[in-house]
Length: 191
Image (cartoon, rainbow, N blue to C red; front, side):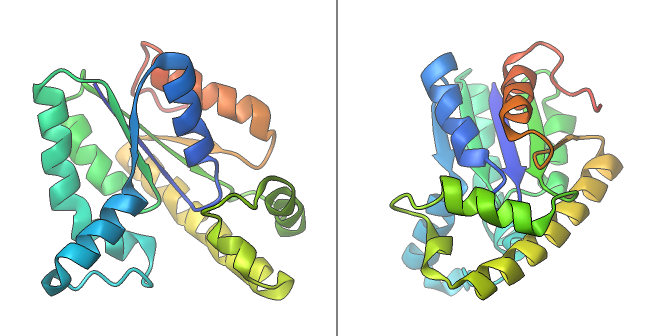
């Protein structure tokens, strides 16, 4: 089973991936690492890591899709998570392998940016927390941009009939819902 967990940066993907490993024994790969490694190892692919996540996702999708198909073929449970994953990509695997693929996306389209900023300050600061290098004004602008990314993701999920989770309302219970959705039997229902 391949689990695909996409969404806006700072929506909780890594937290959920780590919980899926700890609680469900499902290993994961952060697609950020795959994108950075691919960009560094194959400069001729011209992956611009500073461009938007959708553009990076389009560049790395052939590799992610091939890896996903091997995971499915070998009947391994694995979760792939990252902002570069896009609903249109997930739909390819959901269409081809509906019983062996679970996919959902996270965002905060309905977030109050000031509250999201406080959440980032409270829960951020880990060793790979790129956002903590910015000043308050820059973080607020980035959160506004990511809120718009979340709005687009929500629309695309609706278009491709993939589950979208709004993480801005109650992060703790939304996290539980995502884990239940990924680990549950009703894998592709849109709510």
